Image 1 (cartoon, rainbow, N blue to C red):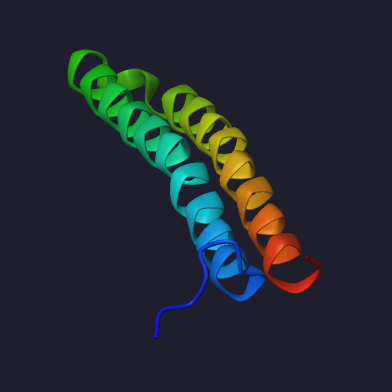
Image 2 (image 1 turned 180 degrees about the vertical axis):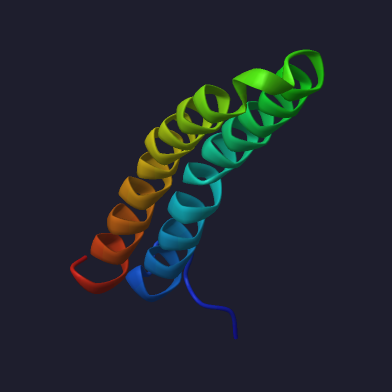
Length: 81
C-alpha cells in the first residue's frame, strides 16, 4: 500500500526538495537583512546612496551564490542519484 521509506523513488525527490528549500533559506534571510540595513543607512545618510547601493548589490550577489549552489546540488540529487 505505502512505498518503502528506503525506496530511492521516495528519498530522492524529498532530498532534492530539502536541499533547495533549506539551502535557500539562509540567503533569503541574508538578502533581506542586507536590504534592511541599506534602507536604514540611506535614511541616515542619503548622500552616500551610490556607495551603499553598490555594496548592497555585491553583498546580495554573494548571498545569492549560496542559493545557486543549493540549486545545483538539488539538480544533481534529482537527476544523478
